[in-house]
Image (cartoon, rainbow, N blue to C red; front, side, top):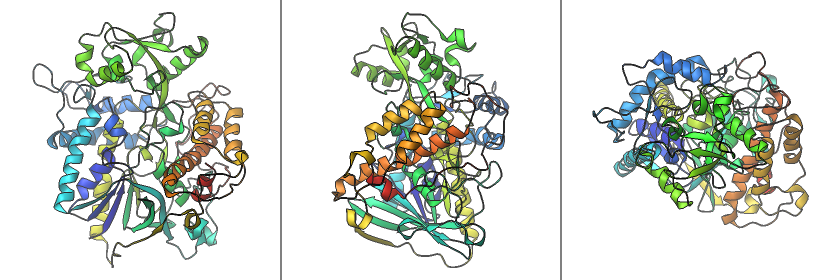
Amino acid sequence: MSHVLIIGSGIAGLTTALRLAGRHEVTVVTKDGVGESNTAMAQGGIAGVLAADDTVEAHVADTLVAGTGLGDEAAVRVLCTEGPDRILELAAAGVDFDCDRTGEWSRGLEGAHSIPRILHAGGDATGKAIIEALTNALRAAVAAGTVRLLEHTMLLDLVTAPTGPSEATGPAGSAVPTGPAGSVVPTGPAGSVVPTGPAGSPARHTSRCTGVSLLRNGVHEFLAADAVILATGGAGQLYAHTTNPEGATGDGLAAAIRAGTAVSDMEFYQFHPTALAGSGFLISEAVRGAGALLLDANGHRFMPDIDRRGELAPRDVVALAIHRRMAEQNGLPCYLDARSVPEVVTHFPSIARGLAAHGFDLAADLIPVTPAAHYFMGGINTDLDGRTNIAGLFAVGEVACSGVHGANRLASNSLLEGAVFGARAAEAIATEFETRTGPIPEPSRASHSATAASLSLSTKLGSSSNRISREELQELAWTHLGVEREGHGLRTVLDRLGEGRPLVTDVEPAELREGFETANLAHIARYIAAQALARQESRGAHTRTDFPTSGALSTRRPESVDLMSTSSLLQEAASC
């Protein structure tokens, strides 16, 4: 049996782990408690074609339209075709989807869908229901000895070895992918390789992932593996306003970039239109699907003036409309009006409770809302089975960029993506390692104290000129990498994050996590800025005020981007 290591415990990671349990030696690593993820917080539902009046072709078309021309049709077709079976499997695993009065599953309507096809559980607690079912199954597998679970364990880096005859050495002696005649592959702003394969496919393998470096209980550990699956979710904590949990710091994406994976579509970050102003508490699009309206500070319903679909236009359209209306009214929030929605508290109990905790009554009050960072369309380039351009390394879920979302994700497709592509990655791994010949290395682990001396790391700085705090980084990103961008601001981000060299001083192990997380976010911010600067148009979730129109479509993944190279995570963390 091979050792398969899965990093992350949302729907994508747990789906992959459960399908491989008993077929290979499986270890699940999660930074917090198992199931603590964006999945668990998902109020919206899961989209799928499960009714006679709906078709896969309609779901495909809706997804491609929402993606504004950059979706990969083959990936979208896989998502929409295989999605219904994955939903049925979730139901079989114990997810109790809501039913209507006839006993059939209720179907909701959300933005940019042409027909109601969204299934919910617990009204507005679909993610919670899914995570509970999958977590129960995982704990049963752990009890049975078919899965090993490492909670409160943070991914630091991927460990790679060259597959070709030549090798270059990166920071701390790590192997770096090499090109022809041993030349180092061109790197992007966080040490990533610039995509070199054809559009929609990873570049050729020049290295293999052999394991991971972890931070666990203040100890730096190495865990060997034959295959590593990254299912680490997004990076919403980059922004001052986000719906994401505190752990969403892009650890897997940043580690993959440093290891040399190809990444793309990094300029496309989706901002959810309706987060409670001042808190980031998400108010699901399903509330608007049920009939809630958006009003400006004067009580005017403005969305029909902007898009014929009104409040159910795609998220990028609604978020931009709210953002601009707020600017016109000197920063005052817009309002969600659900007062006329029948039985709104009954249908959305979690949202009603969350708002009540902030002093608002969903059924009686106008709810102040603003956009907030919600979902990362960009990420690690993968094929339709989650493979990357590094042998033995897979990526699934939000950390991946399979092409299903294009420039803007269709509502309720993200849970579906995790289930569909998690299952496909598991089958690919099972097939690859079941049919391969030759000895399989035994998993091994070596550890040492994670001190500043051993890691060359510090979260304390000797000079304010070369440090950036989490708060400053978040404000920088919100101002210049937010709903609207422009060239000068994007260059400001690149200039600020490329500034100075840190002075390493002593640090306590308890401070390491935040330092690593902020370093990861800084890596990702640099790459978002660089790709946003390179895309001189407005499309989907990427709006350039200096290039307000959409240009001619090109390949989804650019063949080259001229970007500066950067230091390792350890150097970056020291300046955070």
